[in-house]
Image (tube, rainbow, N blue to C red):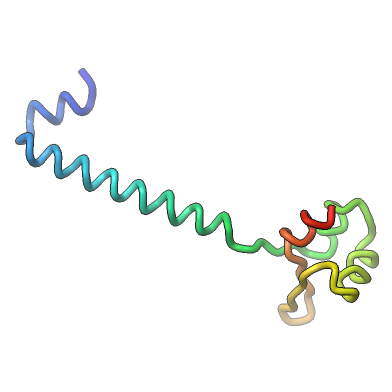
Length: 89
């Protein structure tokens, strides 16, 4: 017996339909949230970016200073956008 059949034996049909709709809505909302997180820019350290590009951290700094890589600072640390690294590679 499937889980839906077990629920159908206990719950009224309209309640079962409402439960199905609620679950479908929640799953769709969660999938949309996960897609939004996937589209958000990820940031790499200079060393991680260098490993992806197959070069040194100094070369990553040079490419960033020339505007070829998108960067941001957090305190003294510099982070490089993973998307800009992937575009360059």
